[in-house]
Length: 448
Image 1 (cartoon, rainbow, N blue to C red):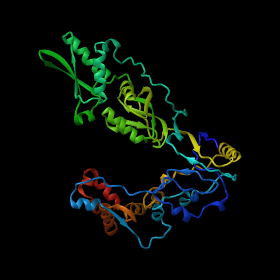
Image 2 (image 1 turned 180 degrees about the horizontal axis):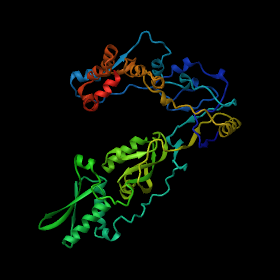
Image 3 (image 1 turned 120 degrees about the horizontal axis):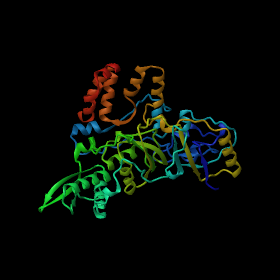
Image 4 (image 1 turned 60 degrees about the horizontal axis):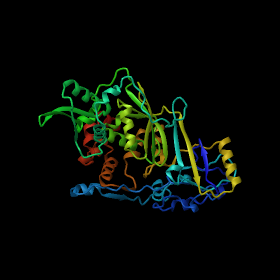
């Protein structure tokens, strides 16, 4: 059976109302946590789409070594078991991995017979294009750097040789082990040195320059600003007042979520991640295209990253006066590939027609229900009911399952005293230095 491609759809499963073909939920709960996807015998026989996101939550591994015995005890994973826990509890289900039936995702809008297939077998099977606030689908179709009247003229850059430019680019992108680049001045005049300083800082933002005398000759040294100063103020060069403070660009990425991508860009640019803004986060296991804005980083500098980053492309640069805000997008355009189709051609055509004409129930993804013994929807329900005591208890009370020893101690203290400050004091110092410094007494009081 050929592979089908469905555009502008957020497909979870094809539709069917034949509830008799549902496998016994107990069978679903026995799915092994080590399996990458749900076996066919734990899905509906006529709607066997496999979503790789339905996996059991595994305990986090502690990769810290060489600590004191007390720290090792605190970091040890403690398995809490509740002898009175019902076999159908959320914690019990999490041991084997949640499936749709466990959280009430069972209804379909059509009565036709479904078909089986595999969803997101490869990350390239899931392509997401952001739809911006103007309703336009975002594409990466221009890698050029826009002309800017505020940029230095090409004549300035002619003072640098091709070899010097290559060495400076390698230094800027950390491609070599040098911590500086020395540029010889052929005509040793103050005016010529000034032009070279300007050329380096304009063409290679993030590098600083100084003049030194070596062997009786003056040379210009280009280097990175070291330490916290570089991160705190990586854009010491002047930013033209007539230019928008934010460089907007389109980011194409493969198999990387949005926050990971921002961290990678920050590392190479030597800036803090919080100078970036975006309208929404995108999945990791996918090819995604979205708009990003960054504060006072030039398009030239961003464009250089295309030479050194794998599975990333930056383009469609423009300067604007405003950042992006979460939620400003109108949606996402999906292109989805389903593989290993087992239904007949007529079944597939019927399902696609229904999907186009009727649509589907836009259920939350399985990842929204959490991976711990206390499901996130229970916390959300308590918030909507303004039951803040229940909210705090759900978050802080002891829970079954594997957890770090220090978390178990904190939860036990909360259960005993209902005092959030006392529970916080049970955290090891290494786990909460920043928390103790920034957690205000007003917040503690609000939790009492």
